Image 1: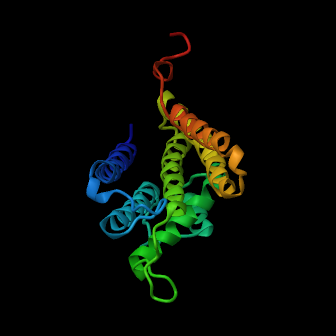
Image 2: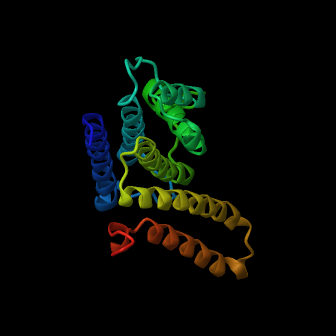
Length: 223
């Protein structure tokens, strides 16, 4: 592995471990549980979630800048920025473009948090809702998928990383299905709501199963 490849892996894993620590804190501390309002997060919980967005965007930027010769100090916020950076690094941007929509959304939210204190146009704080939770999960999946695609494009990936990339893309598609199920639920007739909830649970279980690597992912085809 090249020195840059080693640094890419080390920095990615270090930042994702930081994010994992913050997520674990949110899940394990009763004082940081969501409010009774469905999916609403306020106070320290919301601030930690905002910090995760900032760390996640930094993880994405570090991974990309690692391969740009003489990287500029400008931010990476748009499809144009991503294309330009990848081309400058000698990497074909085509395989990455399906990841651009969630990555640009994440970059926009990071900019709002860092430069505008995550305030709405009227000066009120942006309330962290279940929609923000959904987006953050998508961003976590998209940044990880970007990292593995970068490894694949550079010829640095191994069998496990290739399998993880494929599973992340499947999980992203299922996560869109999950979001659509949530949006549709309020209009579901009362007599069908139990069935609708079971379908939501099934989708979530499928996402978890998809992201779970098996021993077969670590072996060659010849065993």
